[in-house]
Image (cartoon, rainbow, N blue to C red):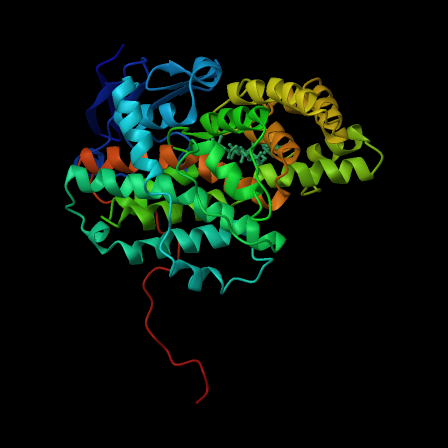
Length: 428
Ligand code: SDX
């Protein structure tokens, strides 16, 4: 492996250091490029640019590998649980039994949100999109914890802030759901674990006892694990960028929620179900929609397909697809859109357009089918993605702070008008 990159620019020749990661990924360190040559690099969408060094998540898009702190996602999804994975992402190692109990107890004890939050919450129309509500409420939470605004918080204060956000998001998400269906909100119960508590607050009613089906708890726990982190995706990069200005964790997470909302990112899981429903209403003619997706004059895209990094199967999509069959069978549900999704995948993966562009199902292609089987309305799907991604956002925000990264401020290449003198054009 080369230790330096030799660059020749006209008469000038320079050597830049090569940095190699623990998995053999290689990068050219361009920190000195502009000082040495006056050049900057240009990389729209950062398709070839590493923004940081990170020890949290590794993925290999060609081989379809995803690991959290070195542990393969397949093993974590099968053997771990969301709280243990959250601890692993935050602190780098799997917890001992004592650490696990302390961590989960600490989160359990902070699941209530300040009653005054309701005044903000009540201001939303009942049909306000859940992601808009979550983004606002997450930032509003910071108003109740002024200590969290201190950029020089101690490690314990950082831990407490992270605990509060992890603990309170499920409560806020459940309240958002309750508003959308016109039901009274439910309060967290300290006797429940994290996922059971969330499902209790979402689907429980004050008029009767409610215990979530263990099949549903397991399915949601697995989905949250699969969404927990994904290195420098759009929303995580946003969290790091906002955090790099020393903005507080609540504001950084709110920014991540905003970025995730986009239909090209986390919003895709809602779009997938809406797309499958359109195909179902159109007689299930998947071939027609595969052709539409290929037609450059048609802005229809196969939502849930394609990925910036995975040029092979998204390992999460494989796990979720298997879980779909398992969960729907156990719940005795037959959802026709699952059959349509499978047909769509089969037709697309035989089509040269998708094969040439290495477009495979991504994490969003099948997840909505499980969310729907559990009973979530489609508009809640992206908020569920945010709930899963929260440990990743917080871990990456924590890593960025601890590594003392500078404020993010990319350069540009200006292409507008060169200097010109002012001449009064408007008649006045
Ligand atoms: C997530 O980054 C992450 O890690 C994200 C994520 C995470 O965990 O955080 O994995 C979660 O966001 C998953 C992606 C969810 N989005 C979708 O499912 C929306 C549909 N997919 C795309 O729009 C697209 O594939 C992206 C946004 C996911 C990736 O876009 P890129 O990398 O910028 O690639 P591109 O848009 O330049 O596409 C390359 C080619 C183009 O065709 P050509 O110009 O070469 O002719 O592939 C085509 C695109 O038109 N293409 C598609 C397509 N996706 C890409 N054509 C039809 N249907 C699609 N879904």
